[in-house]
Amino acid sequence: MILLVLALVVSAWSDVDAHRRTRDEQTALQRARAQLSALRRQEVQTTRIRASTTTKRDQLDTFIKLTLAELWTTNVSLNQARVAAYLQGMDINTLETCLGGIEEALGAIKAGDNTQATRDISRVAGPCTQLDGGTASGLVYPFDFADPDVIRVGTTYYGYATNSVGGNIQIIESTNLVHWTAMGSALPQLPSWANANYTWAPSVSYIGGQYDLYYAADPIGSSDECISVATSPSPLGPFVDSSTAPLKCQSSLGGAIDPNSFVDTSGAAYLLWKTGTAGSAKIWAQQLAPSGTSFTAGSTPVTILLPDRPWEGGNIEAPDLVEAGGRYLLFFSGNDWSTANYAVGVASCAGPLGPCGDASSSPILVSGNGMAGPGSESVFADASGDMWMAFDAWAPGAVGGSNGRGLYIRSVDLSGVPSVGDPP
Amino acid sequence: MHDTLDRELSGVPATSPRPPSRRRGWVRPILVFMIGALLASVSGFLVSDHVSQDEKYDRLRATLSMTRHDAGQQTARLVELRHAVGTLLSQVKSDTAAWSLDTTELKAAYVALVLTQANVSQQNNAIAGLHNCLGGVRQALNELGINDQAGAVSSLDSVATSCSAASGT
Image (cartoon, rainbow over all chains, first blue to last red):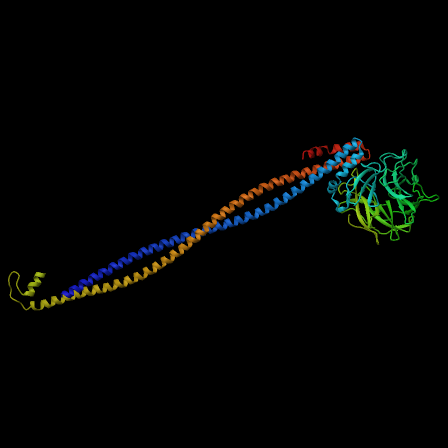
């Protein structure tokens, strides 16, 4: 019995212990569950924080990308603006330099010092050329230098032009065809029969041991325009016109202008010129005496070319005869000189006294490429035999009126139908 | 009860002795039996309850083990998450600083651009003025070149304003 009771007591104690263990385990489980639950809540919360932080980071990344893109665009614009400002600064410097030189030239002319005026404009020729579009168009002298004639003597080129700042007949010189220096007036003194300030379209040739300067002049008291000639032992002048009357007038045709002297390979000299206006224009030629200051005795002027192409607008002028490869090529200008329609054409002649016929139905040099109304051409050879064409033209946007025509030079290929090429 | 039982077992009367009866002969075995039965049933109950508690304990233990395992995994995930959040916060911090710098740089670039564009605009006006002035002065030069004093004066007058403005550039 006692054993039984003992067994019972042991059993009861063991049961109680089992209950205690179970309770303890239950308590531990509850704690573990509570902990797990807390961890899960924390996980949910942390996950939420991670999501919001990720969103924030992504937004920041997007903002950064947008900001950087905008910064890049802004910097590009800024660089462009800075370059523009820098170039503008250069433009302003160029403008101020050109303007300064011209203002000084103006002041010099007002003071009656034309020599100083030519120096002033020569000094700023570069900047002024740049302002007029640079040398890409062939512009080499950006000041008023209309109806040019260019000759070469040795290694020096001389350019002559209609009266303007440089005097009655302007003269400039160069050794490379690109940089030209104003030398003043080739014809300081006009003959007594000629009006001042109306001397234009010079042409210079070495004839009879001297340089002969042919030019158009306006006789006092006459509405005619006539041609006269001055001479000098030097291409630089001064040329002296001791005539008492013009060399050629053709008053019945309204006067003679645009003389062009030509010496062929045999040494015979000729003078070409133009009479009339649109609708009555003609190009004439006549042989000169060996001295060049008069025409060959018994010779008479002959018409060698008439306007016959639509682009000419009824007017041809500014003849320039060239002998090349056994051919006589007559370059001329057509249409209205004060417009952008003015252009250069070419005809082929049987000889210096014609007859001539158009070598091309269209002009070989027209407006464009940074110039307007090119004309009054003068074709010459450099020391190596390459051919060049000097001509005047307006700056685009400044055509006619009191605007000036600058001097342009471009290469010219005389083979076949002549064509105009690049600047020097 | 013990007294009664003892008396019954010893056969000694408590107060007044009574003659032994035939009934008392089977009471004792019955009582022993009943007590034994009671003890057995209590013992059975205890054993059964113990077994039940053990099973419950085992289940609880298994559940606790799983729960602790889950909690361990959860803790690991949480640590990982917190690490990720820490990394993200660090990125946000650095991104915020970078954005702030970029924004400052952008503002500076904007200011510089506005100033430069204003300068460009101003220089454009200056250039236009200079061109205008130069055009008039060149015309005057051409006109003076052919002794047209009146034309030159007129040309200069027409650009006097531009030239005055240009002289200030």
